[in-house]
Length: 110
Length: 115
Image 1 (cartoon, rainbow over the protein chains, first blue to last red):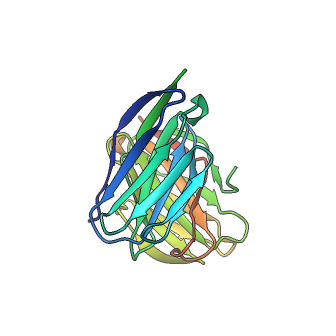
Image 2: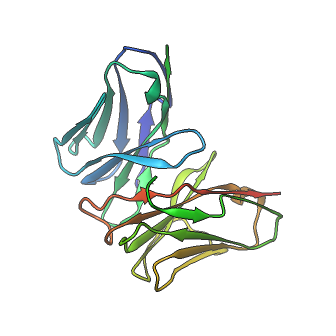
Image 3: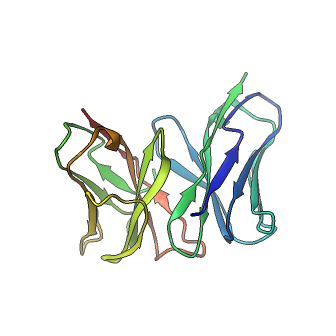
């Protein structure tokens, strides 16, 4: 079965700093998603990455995909408090279901 | 607001009981997916329906079943409930059958507590 690992699981960072969340997956896939979840809330789609070398940016978040390394990264630039949430990567294989990572709980400290 | 609605928001019941969770997809979306989120198992895919037909199956227990109706809303039925079934159940929808840029949009979830 496809395994998706994220690290770190918990991330506490100061406002204004940069950091990267990593997502590794175990088998071939060509579609990777990043979602955000606020406490007690639903999942909000952030990015869909479809091909090797894909890079997408929205505000202070940038996601990239390396299908050969089976690795995706979510880079946070100059963090602000509003980015505090849990971030999930999810990998989609030939079937239509998503395999989710464990999530990274990000806390941005003023 | 994703446009996906789920009812009820919270459900508290006892072991051995049966409950039904309801999901209405975004307007025009043909696929509905069900996921379970719990502390020990994380987010797990349960089942997908596309235009009324079962399309993909994940880690769904035999005690659980789902269906999608002609108006495209879906119901997830959980029976012989156990304490371990306590979780947040999400429904998601997508325009097509999956693949490509067919992003899944998640509903607000139903929090099920089994006592």
